[in-house]
Length: 71
Image (tube, rainbow, N blue to C red; front, side, top):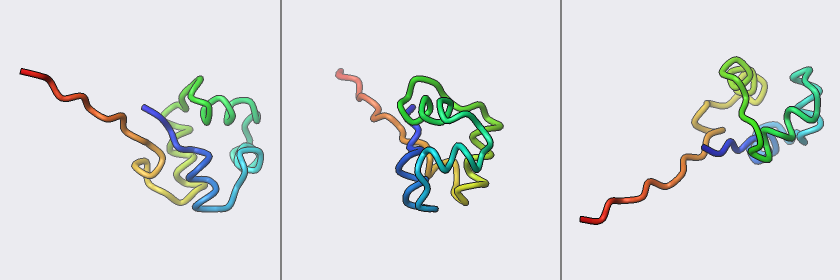
């Protein structure tokens, strides 16, 4: 599952990833890793992201398309 951190931060608060990291009081590398898909935020940090960006979890998550089975 992809997390749309960069897009949501820009859309909701006009935050860069740098600014978002500072507001969350987290290392920039952590937030950049989430945005690049190398790592995923914990449930606690996902909740913090929603609080800071004033969004829903659904706004951050981008579901991958489900492949239909061929019969």
